[in-house]
Amino acid sequence: MRALLFDFGGTLDSDGGHWFDRTCRLYADHSVPVDYSHLKQAFYAADEALEADPGVRTLGLRPLLERHFAIQVRRLGLRGADVAALLAQEFGRPMEECLTAARAALERLRPRFRLGVVSNFYGNLAPILDEFGIAPLLDVALDSAVEGVRKPDPAIYHLALSRLGLPGKAVCMIGDSLERDIAPARALGMRTIWLHEPEKSAPAEKYDLEVVRLADAVEFLERATERSETAAGSPA
Ligand SMILES: [Mg+2]
Image (cartoon, rainbow, N blue to C red):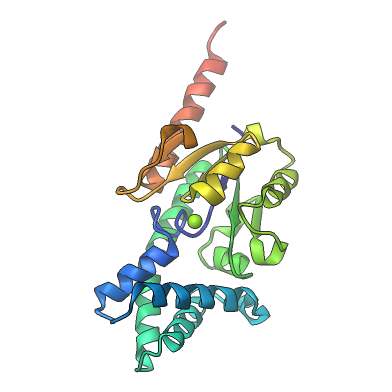
């Protein structure tokens, strides 16, 4: 294995939690009265609006979240100017902790692997990776809004492989979505590590390894390279 590709949302910024699932829990935790289907519509409307807005391209994490929650709250017809700001702050805090931990994890992997991120994002993946000190550790970073192609389209993975100059079999994809991360990567011959919340499960034939913490994936990858280095260095 020569390179690792990571998803961003739910992988580097959370141990397997999708943004929408985390958003639902946040409204519930703060007793904001919303119905699930309306929240889903508002969340994805905000997603689409931000993806289409070139003004987003330079935004850091907090301003991005503030815009996302402002659109949601407006669509939901919620009163109170501070609701969106509060939700953005509460959504952002655990993300920032995870991204700081993810940077440390990537630093540990950096001597052994080339590293990349492939994300369905809003056009500002690069400034956010920069904000958290992750950008200098990466060989490639693909943001769907910049590339004009979204996961699970294999074209975005072909782009990542061609920028790495590696075949699929030399790469491992780590992500929280079986549909967007794991299945298309496997179809191109990559190894896959599915990071998911503990309550989720899927048939073992859909991925190569499953973990519930990014740290577990890192530990596995470090051990795997140690084993292969020992095997390569041992007398025949
Ligand atoms: Mg994800």
